[in-house]
Length: 167
Length: 166
Image (tube, rainbow over all chains, first blue to last red):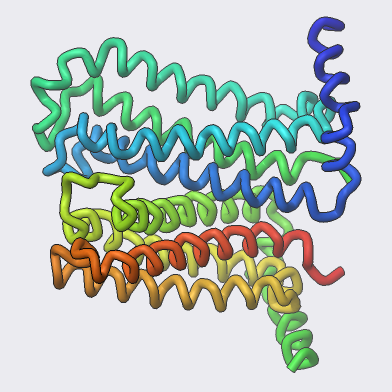
């Protein structure tokens, strides 16, 4: 436990964390950047998930759409993770004690795992089906799971705001 | 004007619908979650078309095809946004109706709607729009404005929580 809480204390006591905690505008500003980035992550990945489900962009090969969408998703994710980390360290101990925060982190990891599994297994024979309007079942499952996980991530994010007693 | 809005907010807060939204604890976070998810769809759709104008997204497809796939879904999503947004106002009228940030958000929303509608109409009518060099700059200006206005809406939306009347 001390191994985990020491780095947490290190970040929470840092000058940056203190500045975010004590400023009236820094937290809302970083939070707004976080919301913009999260929206772009969720909205862009949704375009790909709906394609995997055969519900949108069906005339576009899956690989081409993925090549267009994923750089947007990853850029936005980098900003979301950085801004999220800054928000987290401003009150790390309280966030870690918040069940919705822990659930959100686990769900993001699950969304990443879903992506890795799909790339490793479901996307192996992609050249054979990527032009079909309706991709095979594993691809459709990956798309559906991704949508559900990201909805849950956003819901947890919103619920953190209602269950954290920071101020 | 402010007295009128204060009176209206009081009346709204006293309605039975407002009472339900206020007293059932999961309703507001659920409405906000749906609202943010819809914002994500509308915002990302607009941004992807803007990125296409900058030739940073789906360069191998004409702008008209990208616009045809991403812009029309914004309108039904906007209806859900108006419904969830209205319910959130009914639940906590003073939070937004007596808040300058809320009106800034609505003003930016009108600009975003006009920009998006104009872009959709012109892009679908002329496939090679903004491709020739003389028009490229005006396209990039439009795309920059669109991204800025949408970011402004999201910022203002988050800031409503921090500027609400006590």
